[in-house]
Length: 501
Image (cartoon, rainbow, N blue to C red; front, side):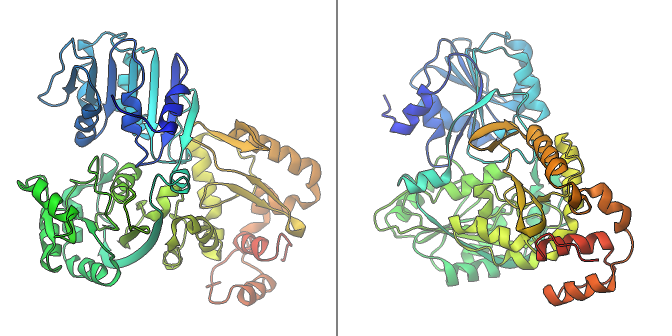
């Protein structure tokens, strides 16, 4: 019988007797151990989207268990079934709707996918529990039509502050790749195209290791070819892939400090416990928050003499794709931060949010803001009442008003809720309340906060006065082709809401 940590038992105790709920637990805090110990009144189904996540949880269950994936079939008497969601979509007729007492969605932020919805729509369990390590903040998908509430949260910050996880120091190294033309497949970069685009980066990755790595180091590579190329350039480095026969011996030698660096290809993304890892180098670009957190998670274990995890992101040109880097661990999105500013977002993990806010607070971001808000509101099906909101990297919304006054709506969670005055309310309600306040208290400043008013005069070329102020206050910013609306948005920020036309 496993001995649970206090917060793991607290999580189990917080689960109601029936319903559909989300649980957020940071990588390294043991979400798999936790859901393996939830009391069952019948069979349990675990749904995962990656092969290693299907096989890994079963070692924690002391009962009959089976797998539904590819050529594997579970038996009717297996108390726990771990399944690939892709396989289950083709085998639903083999299972009655009430077959399972509990259904667990591992990496629950994938629950919105069509494949998950088809499976979840078939079953009628007593409990549907979604576990996730990723604080998605509801930006990409909302899960409020699947789960009723978020009943338990222990994030990365909590884990580090309570001495369950290692602190993290974050760096970025541009290794010169260009993956802007690499297609996306199943929510991430297509492996073959990614391997081709990353060819020739081994020298830069090895240089990053030589200059920045500290102690025992894990490097995540794109392919076997790239892993071998990197290892050739690092004296004493070992390569571990899915085909490596002596994997256990390599890990032992690594643990005994006979090997100082392992270059691996999608082997140590889940379940491998090597606490002494002091440096993680991400040389495998990904759009998947889940995969990124799993890679970083291999270095979050505490170990005697280990001061912190040294996290090195190898970056390059990613085009429109959302590339996961260290800020992703805290739900910070850098897509709207100008490329030249991203290099500033390094240092201790919990310093990154303020650095991201500072980096995004620049003219290049301000003038894109209208399009960013419009697209987001359409995707999320929200009515923002055409308020001139600014979306921050932490997904909060700010409306700047005269005399440095502001209205702020914090980021929404996965269920579309935000917190105002200590009370959770739907995001749409927050937008409605903010609009009501603006109409009642700031009607004289409508030209600043009402986008309809702004657009009426905003398409004309920026005035000479606007251009002069912008050049004085935003040195180095290119003012060619600015219209009055774009100039006004810049001036709203640099002048604290004062209109200059």
